[in-house]
Image 1: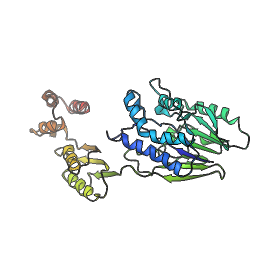
Image 2: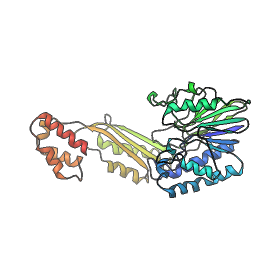
Image 3: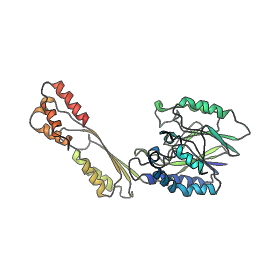
Image 4: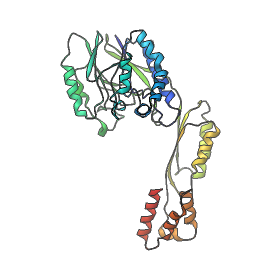
Length: 367
């Protein structure tokens, strides 16, 4: 038997662009289609099928998502290909408890496993939904593990962070794979990057949710006859271009020119999503204009972007700052549109270096 396994699809997600929702639907449909094309006789979804921010308050948005994916759901049902899912953390909260998946279940499009199992003949699939208290996972696993027998392959679907991978910091790990022994394979969601940890396979997400995630997106197929797993890459919905600029190598006024040059060298990328990061330190009388960077992107019809200005300004001493009117000019640049009283409050302090520094830091932190 061939079992297709799909990681986090986050249907409805709009992260880093208001236009992103369609891409997540396209990626979901591509994943289902790829599994079917590779001969999958059943398909498993590893949680976070829906993105909570998209559906928890707006039934119209949920209905639109169902419309986007309905063709693939209908084809699965028509061809008697079971769609098996477990709830992820995004299927919980606000009393929903996997409500979106429950709708698919009630419509006959999915089997939702909540610490339960489904018998597919050659394969017995067990599913543990996301656990806010990870200590509960071994309890679920033990109950499911006791039922083994009949020569079936035993598969577990899970949605929590596991230990031993290279992409997840150890402090976030919630379960040791050693506690998941007794299953032929464990397929794990929640992680967004493909990885294999012992007998645990992490397919990763089907679409880029974090702009800095440059990993290839895929589905995996499990062949129960040979007990083997194969990886199959998904097509990209959009290219993501990442540009980083270090102010130790560039003057602030050169960043705009560098971005223009780098964008023009990537003209082959059609309507990409762009991430621009600027880091380093500039002088107190210098400034980087976010509107200028935005204008460069919009001139090229690149309207989906993130500009991360994460730089610091070299501080003048209190005595230097009090000389002349330059400090007022700096304040006007630092607080555009803010009331002048804030700047006057800044300039009024002259009772000592520490007090001046303290109020300066307080005002800047309020901005």
